[in-house]
Length: 71
Image (cartoon, rainbow, N blue to C red; front, side, top):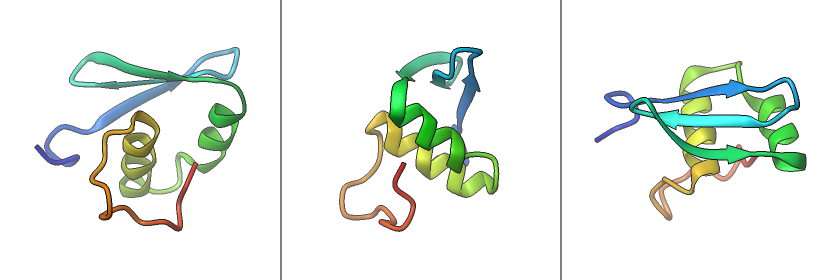
């Protein structure tokens, strides 16, 4: 299933954590410096956001990712 068919959702909490979900289920909580870097990159482009969120969850195809947008 592609990211377009089943996209990730995210929410940034007051304490700076990023809650990443997919299909209504929490997948991962990113916190600390990784969350700070991720938040700084999110919100500019939906396709890029999906790639960043997939990478943050470890849910992406190895070798097929774009190395220019690491969180």
